[in-house]
Amino acid sequence: MKLKNIAALLMALVLGASLGGCSKKDTGTSEAKAMLETARKNLENVKSYDGQMNLSFKFENEDGEKEAKVITDIISFKEPELKNIKIEADLEGQEKKTSEFYVNENNQIKSIYTFFDNEWYTSEVDDETLFYTLGHFEMQDVINTFIVAATGAKISETEEINGAKTTKIDAVIDEDLIANTLIYTGIFAAAGMGAISPEHLKGAKAMAISFNIDEDNNLVSFSFDAGAAYQTISDNVFARVQGQSGYEDAKKLIINKYAINFVMSNINEGERFVIPAEVLNAKSIDTEIMPQLEEAVKN
Image (cartoon, rainbow, N blue to C red; front, side, top):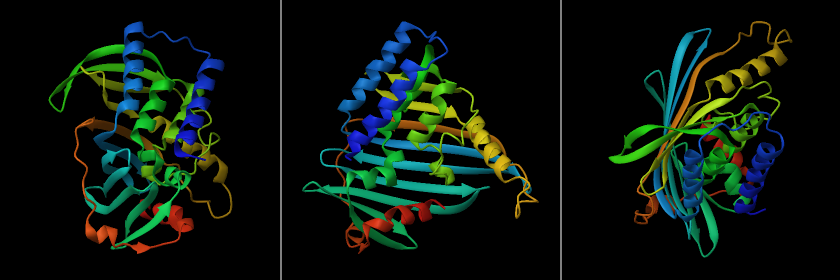
């Protein structure tokens, strides 16, 4: 299945739920809805961008409150595809890990490069493998999904982002869409949770989300706090194992924050970069182990 077909399928599922199962009326303003829809359509014409995603994750366990921060920088080009993804994570101010990926398309053949254990590894990948490995960094698809799922859009205020004037729009992802939306956009992957199901998110409440649109009708930022949804996952998992053999001393994890802010810049203005020679000379690996390798990098 091609990457665009997979993304289309996910979007259809979100749209189907929003059209067929909503119990709440969308009380947003027509102007805000129109701005979001125009920005969503403009995403189709984005051929290159720089992006930065910041995650702030605060939680409490038996050792007390802790905070993890993850910064992901993305440089993305299409036709042909060229991408660089750098991830820096730290826990309590101590650098924990740095991960990096490249994606390169040459003569319609796509290759992924992964830096792991001080070595570069590469493999040719099809669209499906690429989607399941790095699909949560396909930010145009991620933004598209969030906009489609959003209801109650209202213009909030004017904000300046990277020196540009933007209009902030506040909206909500309702309860009937929250599970599918968070799963399909992969926003919990940074916490090492790639294999979650709607059952894990059973009982999750609606989530507020904000978008920023510039004067050229480009969506340049979105932000939300999925801490409550993460708490639902944690509670559901805890309920399953509580009292079982081996989990007698298990304690519930308290999630205080799982806030994400993504900013897109340099839209359709970037110059294609050259992948370093040391990366291109990476060791070749079997495609079948790419998901395991990528999961090891996350953890």
